[in-house]
Amino acid sequence: MARLADGDRAAITPAFELLWPIVSRFCRRALGSDADGEDAAQEAMVKVFARAAAFDPARDGLAWALAIAAWECRTLRRRAGRRREAALDESALVGEADGESAAATRELVAAARDALAEIDPRDAATVLAALSDDPAARPAVPPATFRKRLERALGRLRGVMRSRHGAF
Image (cartoon, rainbow, N blue to C red):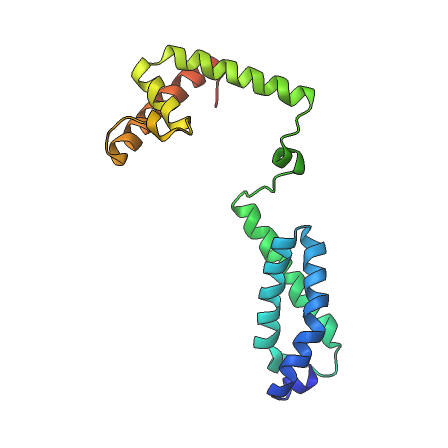
C-alpha cells in the first residue's frame, strides 16, 4: 500500500491479489450473503485503489482497506433498508411451511375467493387471467388494454378486501 501511495502502478496487481480474498471474505461474512458481499467487496476495492494516494504509509494497509470495506457493507445495508428489501429466508425459497403459515395461507385464499365472488364477473375473469400461466387465458385485446383492465379490476378487488378485512 505504501508503494501505491507513492504512485507505483506496478504495485496494483500484488496489492489486489493480497487484499481481494480478505476483503471479499470480510464483506460476505459481514453481510451474510455471498452476492451482497461480493458487491460490497468490489466497491471497496475500487475505493481502495482510487484513494491509494491518500493512504498514510505509517499505518496498517490491511486495516485501512478493511475500514473501507466495512463502510461499504454499512452503505449497502442502509441502501437495502431504505428500499425495504428483505432477504428471503430459505423456507420461503424451498416452499416449506409450518402449520401456522399454512393455515394463514388457506385463510388468505378463502378470503380472496370470497372477494372475487363479490366483484363483477368480468373483473374476476381479468384477475384470474392475469394469474394464469396459460397465455390463452388472456383475452384477445392489446396488452395496454389488458393492463388497464387489470389495474381497475385489482382496485375493485382491493376495495372489497379492505371493506371486509380492514387495511390490506
